[in-house]
Each structure stands twice: as structure tokens, then as C-alpha cells.
Image (tube, rainbow, N blue to C red; front, side, top):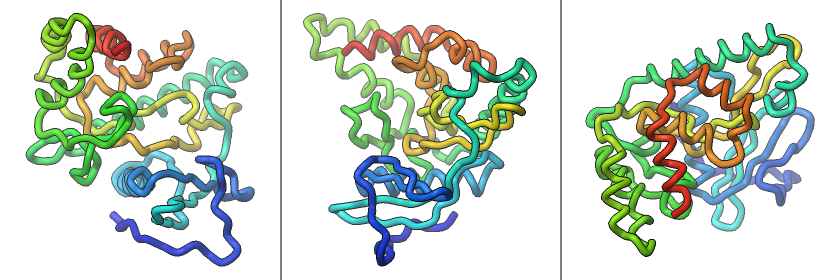
Length: 251
């Protein structure tokens, strides 16, 4: 995998104020903290090296305390959010099959030895479900990860709920490679054919419990009926873990 370098901005190239912004007809720029920029670039290069999943190509990376960003090629097509309602059944089926195949590629990536929960390079885990959105870990075991996941419950008026929720989280799950932020806004397609032209937003990608892709894909407002049906068609379902996750999100 190509290493991430700190580069200086090109003369005349102005970083944008929005987090993700179309720089021109072929280029997008994404800004963030040094950590988030490095993590997403690293994940995108890892995916491009180890799978056939269509992702943007990295053009330039700038790591700077005041303004960190990277530029990437623009993904063709439109988001599945905007396309799904206009697609034929045949094109929707192609999208379903392709998405299922790409997720299978992620699951087939060989897990590290010893296994851990974190980034693709043994770095910290990052997810807005953990540690108020700050990096944490990496976690050497699923048990350690689950302990952190239920920790916020201890701050509620009934701390005994920590043990109740903790017992519902099995420590026997496999650890697999996951996008970990998959939503219909992050899948781009050619609406007439249903071909997936790109999958974006890889900053939370890494090694996660096998149920994490499923529960995160149904996180928050993503649970519209057609997306929920598509997720159930392309992923193994974990209804018990989803129920616990939805309860834990209240803490």
C-alpha cells in the first residue's frame, strides 16, 4: 500500500471551507483533522489494493495542523439515495448483486494475527458511536470493545443496566473488515443500469465485529424502508445486536 505523505498545497490551489467539496468537474476535496484525513486516505488505498470495489483515486494529500485535506477523483453517477426511486427492478437488482459482492470482498480479507478492532494498519478505532467520536483503541479483543461500548450506560440513574446490556453482547463474533459507515448516500450508481460506480466515505473503515456493518448501516435516519430491505438482502442480519445497539444509542 502506498504510504501517506505530507504534501504542500499546489500554488493557486485553495482548500475549501466545506468538509467535502467539488473542486472542478473531475476532482473533489475533503477536509478534516490530520487523523481523519490520514485514516481515510489509508483506508481508500488499502481497499483499492486488495479489492475491486470502485473508490475514488487519491490525487494529493496535505497534512497540516491548520488545514488538512486530500483531493480525489470524482465518482461518476448519482447517490443511491437520489437514484433508487427512479430505477427499474432490473437495475435495482444489479445494484443489489454488486453491493452484495463488494461486501463479500471486504469480509474475505484476511484478518490480522492476533485479531484486533481498529484501523487497517493497527491504528485506533474511529466511529461516531465510540468515545464521543474521538479515536479509541485499538482493541485487542471483542470483550474489551464491548466493555467500552456499554460504558456510557454507567452514567445513567440505573447503572445496573451496564451488566444487562453487556450480557446481550456476545464476545464470540468474528472480527471482519467493514466499511462501517455504509449508507445510501455513500453508494453511487448509474441509474439506468444499476451499476455501482463508486463507494465513498471510508474514514471509519477497519476491523470491526461482524455485526457492525449491519447495525451501522441502519444507524439513525438511514432506516428508510427501501434501504432497510436492501441492507437485509445484501448482509447477514443481526437482529439481537441491532436491538441492543438502538438501546445503547440513547446513552
